[in-house]
Structures are given as C-alpha cells and as structure tokens.
Amino acid sequence: MILRPYQAETLERLAGAMLAGQNRLLVKSPTGTGKTVTFAAMLQHAGLRAWLDCYPANERKMLVIAHREELLDQAAAKILAANPHLRVAVEQGERYATRTADVVVASIQTLQASGYRRLDRLMGHHRFRIVVVDEAHHAAADTYRTTLARLGFLPLAESNEAKSWGKNQKQMERDLREWDQVSSKDQVLVGVTATPNRSDAVGLTSVFQSIAFSYELRAAINDGWLVPIVPWVVETDLDLDDVKLVGQEFNQKDLAKAVNLERRNQLAVAAWEEYASDRSTIAFTVDVAHAHAIAAAFTAAGVEAAALSGETPKPERQQLLRAFSDGRLQLLSNCMVLTEGTDLPITGCILHCKPTRSASLYEQMTGRGLRLFEGKQDCIVIDVVDVTSKHSLATSPVLYGLPPGVMAQGRQLEDVARFIEDVMEEFPSLDIHSYGHITLDELRARVKTIDLWQLPDLGAHGQGLRLKWVRTGPEAFRLQYPWEDATETLIVGVDLLGRFEVATSYRQKLGNGTIETTANIIAAGMDSANEALRSAERFMINHRTSVFRMKDSSASWRNKPASEKQIQLLRNMRAPIREKLTAGEASDFIDARRLVNKRRKAEGR
Image 1: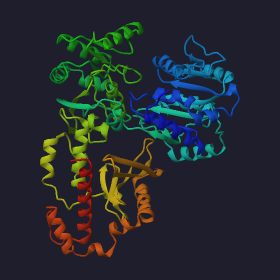
Image 2: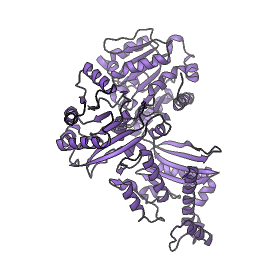
Image 3: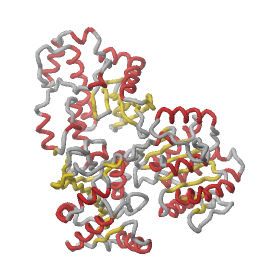
Image 4: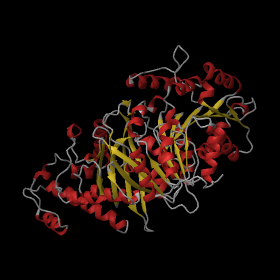
C-alpha cells in the first residue's frame, strides 16, 4: 500500500506514542486526505504489526466505530482493499459479524442498542486490540464514552456506564490519571477526525490522552492534496442578535426562522450566479424547510437543483447523489446530511446559507468541496453573512486561523493569509481580531495610522512576564527571534484537546533554496495561557539564554537611550525615530525588521 507522506508519518507517530505508554490517541487530518486509508494501513505498519503479533492469532482483532451507518460499507471496503488477506465484517441492523472476522466495522447506534447487547456479544466473540473511532469529535458524547468504557479504555461507574464528571474538569483529570496508572495497555484506541473541537464545549480530554499527529488544512492545500480556497462574501441586512444559543451554537429553530426568507435566499442565488455559475455546488442550510427553499430558489432561476435531508428516503438520496456526481444536477441543497463521510469530488463550490459560530462545523462543511478532481483548480466558497454585534460567525478565514471578518473577495485564501502574516509581523500592535468586516484594501489603509513602536497590551496575561510577547489571537501569543542561522518562533496557544501548549517553529533556507520549517512541542497540557507563557519564558532562560538576555525587559541596558549606531540602522530601515527611544525598543525593532526582510528574501519576495 503506497501511503502519502503525512499518512506514513501518522503511523510512525502512533507507533511512537504506543511505545511511550499511551493508548488513547487522537489524529487530526482534514476532510479529503484519506483518514480511512490511514487507519486501514495500521495493520500493515511494521511496528504496529510487530506489537499485534505478540498476541495469539485470535486476539489481534480491530473494531472500527462509525458515527453514521452510511460510512460503514465505505470503511469496510477500504480496509479490505488495504488488507485483502483479512476477513472484514459489518455489524449493523440485520448484519452480524461472525466469530472469524478479523476486522469489525460497526455503527455506534448498533453497539449501544438494547443496553449495549450487540457490543457485549461482539466482546464475547472477539478480543479487540485496536479500536478506531471515525469522526472522533463525537467521542466525548455519553454513548461513545460508555462504549469505550465497556471496551476497557475508560473507567466505568457503578451503573455500568462511563463515569460522568459533569463540569468538574479537575476531578476528571485526576480520575483519568489514576485510571491510567492501573489500566491495561494491551490495547490501543485511535480517534481520527478533521475537526476535534465540539460545539457543546465538551472536551475530548475526557477520552484521549494526547494528539499523536495533526495535519493542518493549510498544509494539505499547500502540499497539493486538496484544492485552494477562493472565498467570496455576500452581506445581508438580517440581524441575528436575537437568535438564542444552545450551548455554543445557535438554536436551529430560531435560526431557521430568522434566515429562511425569500430575499435572503435570492441573495444567495444572485451571488452564486455572479461567482460560481459554472460550478457543481453544495449548499448548506439550517433545516429541511430551508434546504427545500434554497433548492426551489435555484430551480426558479433555471438551475438543476434538488434538496437532500435526513427525511429523504435512502433510494432517492442515492439517486440524487449519483445525478450530482454525473453532472446532471448542478446544485445539492442539504441540511446536515453532507457534513461527514460523503465523497463528492466534483464539487467546485460550497455555498454557506447556514450561519454558524462553530469553526469546526464550518470546516466540515467546506471540506466537502476541497477534494481533488480532474480539471478542478480550486473551490469557490460563498459565505452569506448576516448582521450581528453579539456573535462571531465562522467564515472562510477561520480555516487558516485568521479573523472571520477579513473579506478576501475572490483572492485565494493562501494569498490573504500571507498578506495578513506580513502585516502582523511588520505591525505587531495591530489587533486585527478586534475588527469587524474589513477588506484587504481597508486593512492597508488602516495600518498606515499605526504606531510602529507600540506593542499590543497583553492585559492580565502580561503580568510578571519579562519578554515582549505579541498577541496573535484571543489566547495566542508568539515571540520571534534569530537563532543560529535561521529564524525561530516561540508559540503559545490552545491545542486540539483544548489545553495550552508551547511550541517552537524553526524556519531555515536550505542549500537548494527551499524553506524548511521544523516544529516541536516544548510543553503541553497546561490549564491557562498564563501558565503556558511562564513555561515558555523558562524555556528561553534555560535553552535560549543569549536571546533571553537580549530580550529581557528587566535588563538595565534596555532602559538606556538608543545608541547612535542603532539610530543610524533605524534610519537606513526608514523607521520613524521618536523621542526618548530606548536601546531595548530599538533592538527589538531592528531584530523584528531583519527577521521580516530575511523571511521575504528567502521566499523570493
């Protein structure tokens, strides 16, 4: 089986984590990058195979748990293709896995039905050494956690269900640490997902110990495994401030009432006709009625369109999907049917008619249009954006970690990201996350008014810190400095499990002219940004001592007046020279500008 580089690295990371004594591991990889192929290849990996072979032949079974029944046959087919010598069976409805099956693929609904009777039957017949949870962002739900507890990965309560911690995060962590001290490590749980964050704020730390490997969407696009994103925004005059929330997301009934209006639906049609009228398109809507209303609006405009929902009979659903794949249908309007596990690579446009606050859900929906397809150069993403002062609506920029208000308007998202990164490097006091909707031209105009010498106020996060950190997000910070013959950035932010981590990113130009970036996790699993920032400064003191001495705000030399040599360098850089400029401020500015110029030169800009 020929794996892509990131798939092969995933397996290496999983094997390494298992050798380190971990057995509940999470893997993040974007929609369309072959997560099923990756876990199918686990059974062929030399290290994992050697581990399995330590057990008797009848105790080397794999269980794959899927969230939706439609994914079962798809997963089973790929596993069998990768392992034609194995017996692969599906456990669902009237289908039962035999005792001789090597791999069992089952839906979570089947396993938990009738008091987990089907799961108990399987466990009586099979010894599952490897358990894979597909779409693992669902794994923190009670049904999943109880299933995994029965399989031996989590502690069981007296009720024979997974132990519940409610909102007591600290107690959960203590219990899991105690559990990990005594539980058997002769089996491994692997969760695979494109979007680890849940809209109900229930963290995956209640299931998984660590992130074995993460392959980011931007990297997958730049590596050529997914197509680039070209965003457009169409603004409406509808106000969403009165729409209630359920947890972190909109109440869907209230939201549908607010947005399923003829004038808004017509705006969506008009935007599509202007930007993507030659593209096979998937539209995402709030509810069933909204899906049919959008389809009707497109049909009235002469477009071959149809609606799809959970109420659509299975034969009709398959017929519509075939018609879309064959190009006989140009637009499929759907309500929460095509967010997971649907492979429609012909899709060249995603039309977001459903407002969402969830970046994870937004990425799931957008990912449906990013798969490679013959003749497909990119994917147009159209966001129908409503007025709100209370909510932050997910739009295309959030896919690259950018503020949702940035309006690319037809420029590739990668170009937009590079522009914003350049601006933030040159103007570290720019708090771009505080802006509302802003075009790139408006952003260019705004930076002309920025004081180059001002650093952003870190508020309570800055108390007790000795280095000049730059805020890059609500709870994300970075510190950039020259190290050896390259540029290193120390990054503090939230990891995929909702905990804070400290990482380094080391960029250097190789002899062949290419840019190599090496990332390393320095510390992880911290509860707050303050704890992570303090840990990062300890790393600087112990491992980047010379840089720390130069950057330490308490060093006496930093408060002295800037030297004539520094001022001359600043003039050569055409930087404004303000009164009472200190040596420390001048040093930081010169270092920052040199790093920017060095990076641009290395990239040929």
